[in-house]
Amino acid sequence: MSPYKSVETEDKSSDVVWHLASVTHEQRVASLGHNPAVLWFTGLSGSGKSTVANVVDKLLHELGCKTYLLDGDNVRHGLNGDLGFSDQDRVENIRRIGEVSKLFVDAGLLVSTAFISPFNADREMVRELLADKQFVEVYIDTPLEVCEQRDPKGLYKKARAGEIKNFTGIDSAYELPQHPEIHVKTAEQSIKECAEQVVNYLKDNGYINASSS
Image (cartoon, rainbow, N blue to C red):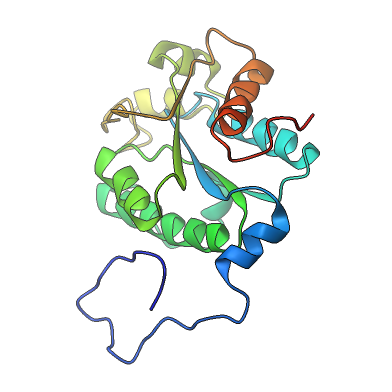
């Protein structure tokens, strides 16, 4: 039996069973020297999710942690290249990322994911896939007006002009995280300070060695 929760589907065959590997999850974790988790960066487009996640990934790598970074745009080039931006496709986008993230955690990694992931139910769905304390929600809290001023890809301008539909924050809702483990405000802190806030949380909560420098 799988040590992890999974989403049940009506058409899943009873012949599909979890294959137990010779190397256990616990053995992988012990060899890496840190506790695995998903760092789930969520926030509006332009909030700084990818930027902060990238610096966090770099800092963790420098501390000797085994990591991987899943970025929303990068994943849509391949794994989720068949999905659009309707509410239904957004749900499927997050479901797939949740399953991939779970595999990275099984391998013992600290995996960062940078996705708008606008719906609370979808983020909670991913949390439910993982064991206790393996899902760390990082809310990148940046006011909409600041995100629009940044507009690094010109997406807000297109959305305001009606050229992009279902754009989060404009004509599609973003549901604020209710109880994020980490609350980051990029409009009030530097990117380095935001990244250090995340890393310090991991040290303070036993994910990585607090004495690492």
